[in-house]
Image (cartoon, rainbow over all chains, first blue to last red; front, side, top):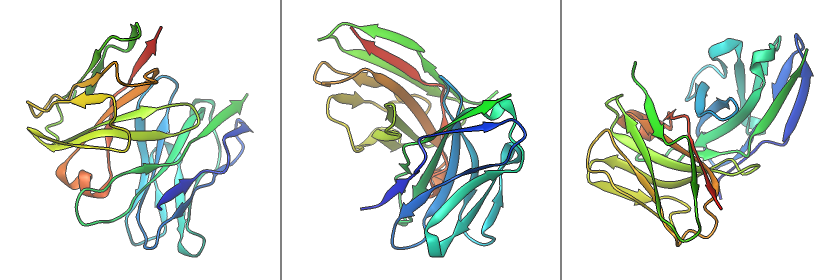
Length: 115
Length: 115
């Protein structure tokens, strides 16, 4: 069955430090890949997406993610974290099926930022 | 500004009562979705609709019902048959292309608590 794994439930970093959030997926082909961010009590906002082409994708708020086919991974990175980045981050995949694509979400990684 | 409006933001219900959550979008999107979010479980799809007057069950449809009489509206009813309804409910929408690629726009959510 298709699945998305975010190994880190909770991560704490200091403001200004670099960040990497891990995401692994289980699917036979390359799906569409996404990272969404959720601030407390809010809905989700799309940070970035990968469909094809360049495996390093840039998103909003200074985030980037790299697709590695050999590792079935799509890790999210940011060189310098700001206090406003504290939120929950969800990796998601949409296995290409040619029609409606059910979005499969990981369980999320909650990021805390120390001043 | 275009967006998705969910109401109410907070709702309390007694056991045995049905409750309806509202979701309205002015993005002119064809597809709409309802997700349920529980701590540590990511998002799970309840129902989705790709066109007016048509909708399909998601992964956890039991105890829920929906209607899609207008393009901009997709209300969710949590019935008394739902055994564990306390959760955060998120409505989302997408373009027709987005329903194929998985790019969703989310509302800010409704938190339902059953007393």
